[in-house]
Image (cartoon, one colour):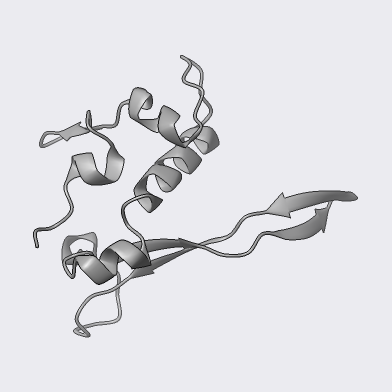
Length: 109
């Protein structure tokens, strides 16, 4: 199969050129983002992570050997900080490439 496309990973309206990546907030509402002109950076990062996880997951990788990055949720836990309980949702992002070196180079994926 072919490498995953921008649309498959980030939504139908995702585009890029030599200098920018555009991910439409409308494509992120499917994973729970409430789109506004003032979304916080963490909101956007989580929405992008959740959107990418809908395609880049271990199950999909079994069907498409060209997928080299997988995002897999773990069990939620409770952590304590600042004298309060927080629900922590942990995701594992696995980057797989042929064993040719130990550094992470985005161009390898």
